[in-house]
Image 1 (cartoon, rainbow, N blue to C red):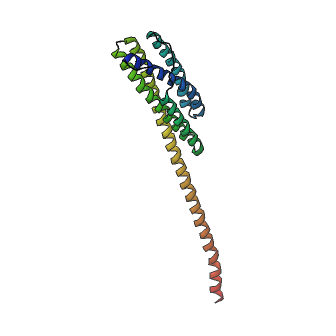
Image 2 (cartoon, helix red, strand yellow):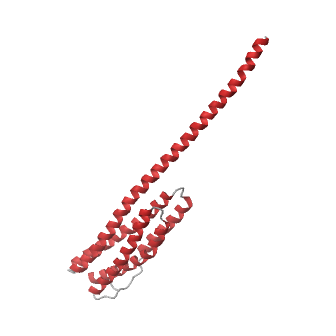
Image 3 (cartoon, rainbow, N blue to C red):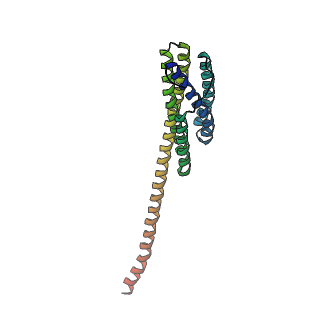
Amino acid sequence: MKLDTLDTLMTEELRDVYDAEKQITKALPKLAKAAHSPELKEALQEHLDVTKGQIARLEEIFGLLDEKPKSRPCAGMKGLLEEGSEILEETDKRASDENLMDAAIIAATQRVEHYEISAYGTLRTHAERLGNDRVAQLLEQTKEEEAEADRKLSEISKQILRNAHNGFEEEEDEEIEEEEESDRRMTAGNGRKRSGKQPASSGRSRRH
């Protein structure tokens, strides 16, 4: 399609984000399955339901514009999801605890959220300039849902990082305790050796 007017530009951008949302509905169940935190699992499952509602809202918008709901392959979202998948694979191989995997999932998901916030904000502005207040309102509603999902993920991330930090401190404490116990055993062993030599020395002194 030739992008010669703001209307055609907006229609193509709607098709792009329509495809992006469909890609996300396929990715979210995999992310939820890989997550360990119950709060993160729940947030991802909830956002899957929200995303399905957003797809329906986009279809409503297409109807308001007298356009058929149609996707245009969204290369941007495809790249983000592929990058996130690669990070998760690498994290799974290296992870020493569950918090690291959850942190990676949140990082990948928030990149997606930021992409969507930007896309919907631009679309809302186009609708406002075209004087289509109802479409602008619907797009703003979706933008706010994406922003709320991003805020929720940030809160969960803080808790996960606190857990990871506490776990790291516990590991350090255990290592310190093990080192101290090892030092105590070594000191006690050296003490027994010195104690064992003392009677022999004393005996030689008496024979002399």
